[in-house]
Length: 304
Image (cartoon, rainbow, N blue to C red; front, side, top):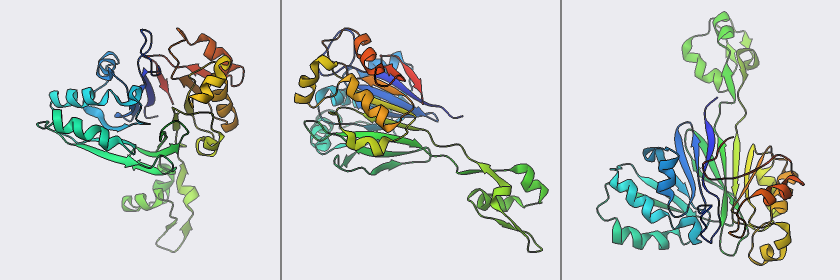
């Protein structure tokens, strides 16, 4: 099965600490890299994780709070110094162009590559990117400013050719693409060979959802229903539930409740408040609601 993994580069929240980096993670899907959020110092984390800068083509920014986007200027500059020539695509809510345009104008005039900015509507669930490997959808979240989560769905063939059956019926190679697409095959004497006899079911697409930053928001459940892996912010423990509501964040229990209702396979919590030196208490609270919970940490790689 092709690689589909999530690399945690940073899982802290806004206040800098010595034990967590600001929000950022990289998805490796079939050797293509997709970044979600870009906190400060992300180039250093890239080096530590031995990720290839040249394979990064798309960056998805959830919202324009500094701990999610202040790493972009440095990363863009680093890619230029490494001699990048291919276009870098940056996706984000309204305001992403106002944030990046002055930086590109001031510091990136002579870069050997282009930065293409794509503004998304954070209030809509929509397909925002598609390539040969993946479809990426926006997830409307509820925070203090326009914020979008992201749903990554790998692209798989619905059916695979049953080569033994195709050879038994002496089907020409030129007909294989149509059969894989779902068509029956008609022999020279007019017999119809049903597609189900010539193909086998394909692999179900794996799905990964990223939901940060957001307050407790059951409205996202139909969008993330049954995903293989959900990353959901868990900024506070339950004792700080009022603080979470005031700042439009979630508690660990609330993140777990979303996972439970959405019937996801696994939950990863992150975006920890700087008041917690470790994630043990947050993880314990989440597990009381949803047992299949993992606490994110820098350097962690999670297979989807």
